[in-house]
Length: 213
Image (cartoon, rainbow, N blue to C red; front, side, top):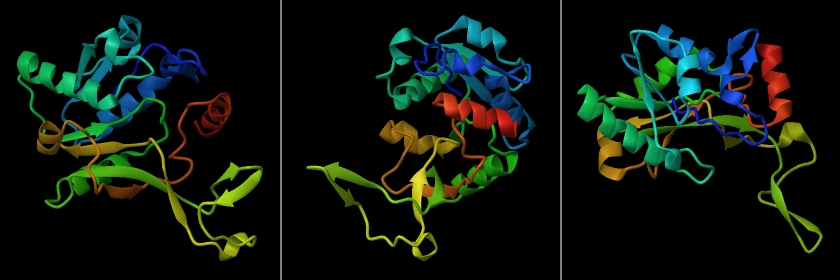
């Protein structure tokens, strides 16, 4: 569970209080209440965030270097660093890695259980969270809109496409150790729909999440 200090658009979003409860603790509570999760690793570049994060027998709190908490930092690097520290200092080697970002507080325990069940299957190395969409995506070139797919102006006649959200990522431990990345070339899609897929990145997202919390 990565929770870095700096956030540009919504400041201190990981510890922002929603109904008197810090945002990060919504995700922590879901992980605590998931019986299939044995260890919860909360990693941050901020002691303040680690202190605000809920304490529990399942939880290991870990301070990470500032270089792994910049806008340019790759989450795979943070996971790699965390796994090495877990192995050397705590003698913990997991079977499955789940990435639960605090900015998606509405994910359900059922979704976490489904992700674990999928990753326990032999042929699935990683999972990617997706949502259905009938939106029309495209680009503007020389003042002309170019759709990335054929579409109808009648929404009901459009086929579903899928967009990635940030609710839950995961992979097998052995896969990560070998490839140093959480996402395989052929990730298995796990469907996470609204409002569970809401992710706090913009101020408008905050208002929507407040409504559903």
